[in-house]
Length: 248
Ligand code: HEC
Ligand code: HEC
Ligand code: HEC
Ligand code: HEC
Ligand code: HEC
Ligand code: HEC
Ligand code: HEC
Ligand code: HEC
Image 1 (cartoon, rainbow, N blue to C red):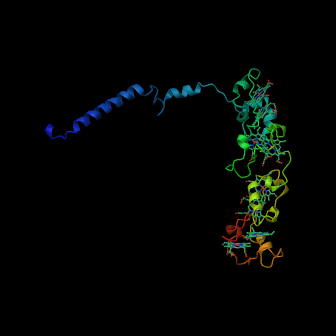
Image 2: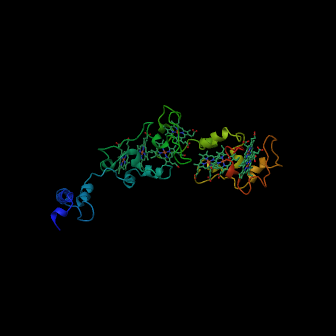
Image 3: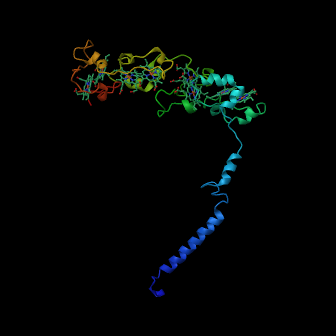
């Protein structure tokens, strides 16, 4: 094949490709660290580098050597899931030389609300407060032991923990219907709500006690035929029990 038959643009393209390959090979020689690939697809020296960093966290096991009283108390408390160093910061140097280094303690009012400040995205029932409204001006530790936080007295009202449901119901047609009309709530639900559950209605009869045609309830309460109304569904498949609406 004659050279003149090859399309004009191929020659510069070939040169560019050749240069690119040369550049790549050179870059690989110069830029890839020496220890790359020794053990696998990473830089072997990185292992030693990371291992050479100073250790700053000691872990809760170590605290137990000298503060076993606090570890024990915390282990039984609502804060059992929190490591000491979550609040006290890295404390390895303290654990090795307690006389030389003392870890700080977060005594300011700004700290605990990082976890307990109101935030609607937190799980249902997670203990939350509005720091500006909740006993302002006093350190949290005046009333709560950080190693064993319990409520100074269990709140009487369901709304203390179920604020959103309570305020929804407050402005609904069910404002006068007490929570306990529909929920059976064992006493210990107050002190240990996650272990002792409140019961939810399971069938239509809960609603029927007021809304069934023949029910013995005040006349202003609207009636439906409890057998047929809504077909085979549960009442709360269509009506939100904490804010029922008939005009769907
Ligand atoms: C070798 C024993 C020892 C170990 C291990 C140890 N501590 Fe201490 N810690 C002490 C002593 C002793 C004090 C009291 C020092 C003082 O009063 O100055 C103390 C005091 C403290 C204080 C009090 C600081 C203050 O402001 O009053 C905190 C907080 C603390 N330790 C946290 C920890 C944590 C967290 C760990 C685990 C990572 C830990 N300690 C491990 C011996 C130890
Ligand atoms: C929720 C945060 C939090 C956690 C978790 C926590 N602490 Fe504390 N700790 C504090 C606060 C706040 C203080 C200061 C208390 C005060 O000034 O009344 C404190 C005080 C201390 C003190 C000083 C003496 C005392 O009893 O007041 C020691 C020692 C201590 N903590 C060790 C520990 C150890 C060990 C752990 C893990 C078992 C731990 N802390 C877990 C927040 C925490
Ligand atoms: C890293 C997050 C975190 C920090 C920081 C924290 N807590 Fe907690 N706290 C929790 C968790 C988790 C629970 C357990 C909640 C549960 O049972 O669902 C809890 C529970 C509580 C409770 C509820 C106890 C009850 O009876 O319902 C109180 C009160 C409390 N903490 C106070 C404090 C105080 C005071 C501080 C600051 C010293 C603090 N917390 C810092 C995570 C945190
Ligand atoms: C004057 C005492 C006092 C102070 C100070 C205080 N609390 Fe409370 N806290 C209480 C009482 C009492 C309750 C029980 C609920 C109620 O009656 O409001 C409570 C309840 C809580 C709850 C549980 C709320 C729920 O809905 O489950 C959390 C979390 C809490 N406090 C965190 C804090 C934090 C964080 C601080 C500091 C910013 C703080 N408290 C300061 C007395 C106090
Ligand atoms: C001390 C706080 C607290 C108080 C007071 C409280 N609850 Fe609860 N409740 C909770 C928590 C936390 C949960 C979530 C439990 C879980 O998810 O395991 C819950 C769950 C529930 C549930 C759902 C159960 C389920 O199976 O889904 C109902 C219903 C309920 N509570 C009703 C009530 C009623 C009614 C009252 C008042 C008579 C009340 N609670 C008072 C904290 C409380
Ligand atoms: C008219 C009956 C009725 C009343 C009054 C009522 N509930 Fe309910 N509640 C229900 C029913 C029914 C469910 C189940 C809903 C479902 O499974 O979809 C429920 C569910 C719940 C749940 C589980 C979470 C959720 O939103 O589904 C909680 C928590 C709860 N109720 C708390 C309360 C509290 C607190 C009050 C009082 C402020 C209250 N309820 C009043 C009927 C009622
Ligand atoms: C203790 C009695 C009682 C019970 C139990 C009860 N309700 Fe009601 N309900 C009422 C009252 C009172 C009204 C408001 C009547 C009025 O003033 O219009 C009402 C109103 C209603 C309305 C009409 C709302 C509107 O837009 O007019 C619906 C729907 C409703 N309830 C559904 C339910 C469901 C579903 C249940 C069971 C989860 C239930 N109710 C249980 C007392 C009750
Ligand atoms: C399939 C959905 C559905 C189910 C299930 C259902 N409802 Fe209804 N309900 C409606 C609709 C839609 C309306 C409004 C139109 C009407 O009056 O029929 C209504 C209206 C009502 C009214 C108001 C009647 C009036 O005259 O103002 C009450 C009270 C009521 N329902 C209670 C209940 C009760 C109690 C149950 C359980 C036995 C239940 N509903 C089940 C859809 C349903």
